[in-house]
Amino acid sequence: MASKTEGAEVVVVGSGGAGLRAALAAHDAGAKVLVLTKGNLESSGVTAVACSDRMAFHATLAHTEPGGPDAWRYHAEDIWRLGGYVSDAPLARVLAQGAAEALEDLVRLGVPFARRADGLADQFLTDGSKYARACYTGPRTANEIHEALRREVRRRGIPVVEHATATEILRDGSGRAAGVRLADGRLVRARAVVLATGGAGQVYETNVFPEGMTGDGYALAYRAGADLVNLEFIQFGLSSVKTRLACSGSLMRAWPRLVDENDREFLADYFPPNAPAEEIYAVLFRKGASWPVSLEEPSHVIDLAVFSEIEKGRAVRMDFSRNPAAPALDLSRLDPGLWARHENLRRLPLTEPPLRDSPLARLEAINAPSIAWLREHGIDLAGGEGIEIAPACQHFQGGVKINQRAETSVTGLFACGECAGGQHGANRPGGNALLDGQVFGRIAGESAARLAKRSAPGEPAPSEPAPPTPGPGAPSARDVRASLQRLMTRRASVKRTAEGVAEGLATLADLAARPWDSGGTDAAFVAETHSLALVAEMILRACGARTESRGPHLFFPSPEARTPLPRGDPEWRKYLVLRRGADGTMQIEARKPLEPDWELTEQPDA
Image 1 (cartoon, rainbow, N blue to C red):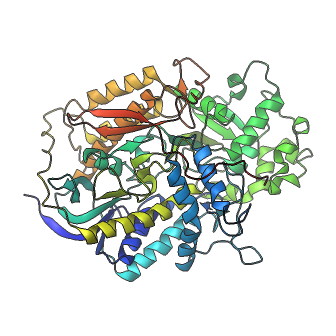
Image 2: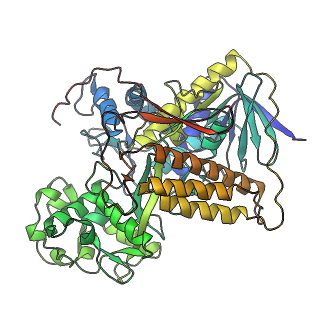
Image 3: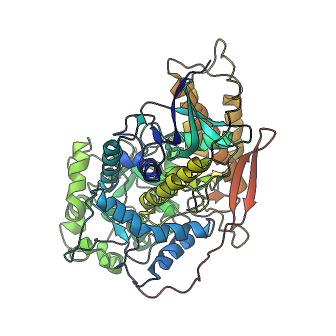
């Protein structure tokens, strides 16, 4: 018989930036709160560990261009437009209008955002935006946000249960959420449950997520009967295999060689025959500002080239020791307008030695700290070592479908952060992920507290039966996880096809055909692997159902094709909702998203 642990009015599952913000908001609303986290509070979740050269928190403030009381509208329009019109526009409005308050909350908690000389928050331009909205502290913006939230949770004495893996949403007879079951069998009762478990990066072999990001929230919500949306839209970007560093920005703008394990330059093979060198290297340069693969960015050819070479069994690396030669790079023939908008490039003598002749010299002039960082992490560019790269899973655009109150389709169940879906479509403006966690984290906590104060669920209904006991020769959970990670990387990452999806689903069915042995792992690892297998099926079914390309979903007419299908506008301006049917099968429905509830106008010139 399962044992019980102390419950709360609001239980928050997950302790990243969104989860901690939800816990604080529910506490502010007077609810008794409990936080469950799979690891240690100090290091759990993407927000606690993610770094980049200048990590962004996207916000429209009083001084943000174009200014005026309607400035939020341009932010909302960017979210809706960049999302490819497959998100719920009213949620974009919530994000844009809630941004200033979210930033102010973090400042009050001690997050040291960079300031201009006049004392206002400094902001820079990120991908997908027309105006500079990105606030930052530096490379550790996310970490400092998490530290501030964590400090406040500790100061208030909000209880946190560490090393607690949730495996089931408890529900009463009416279907309302009534708590969670943990992997060790304990039951945690609650009047409302907030899912803030982040994305499912570990479903892919190469990813930039910390350990433990196994899509538990998606699986928990699906088994509880909640709707999920936009799971085919997952951002991938070229990253260091060894360090998981995102290889964008200055690394691409230094024009390195992209070579296979035999030192063969292959980039020109993926451009039209006889494509001018200036065209190839202009695209390579622009890859620095469009790191996640996206149909709408011509630089997706770079991702496809690297993916295709790896699929052929070849390791790929960025080499900074000498200039590309196939075709030859001649910076004097490139349009200086390429780098004119980049303050750290436009004053450099790029067409004169030594910068003209060496990617390493250019990188040192543009971003010397990156060379030092890589050396500290075991990659010596100055010594001639290259960076092995691969497309890495970076962010889930979809998730558990929410409304403007962060409610899911299951009463008493809320979601926020990367676990939630509907607020972003195919793409998102850079910096909106951190913003999303704070805006909808607050809303989820407040909404959960209101419901918890208003009414309580009934007694939890009986749980589903446990999986059968594995017999002799059963595959281990560790082997199953490795197999599905390889499968998803091949069939549902950069290149998707109907044939690949069908093969992937058949392989998943084979993996699930018999029980798995723990293989020396614990109950939490086995539960996580079950979550990964379920999320993998959801992703594959969503990929197969969207027979067009949009954002990071590149759908090809055949495995041999080099060009993805185009966007299917307007007929594919809809999102795909997944849910568990009454018969236990996975159902999928195409649905039109909610239209903007503000007037769309042409944006003024920046």
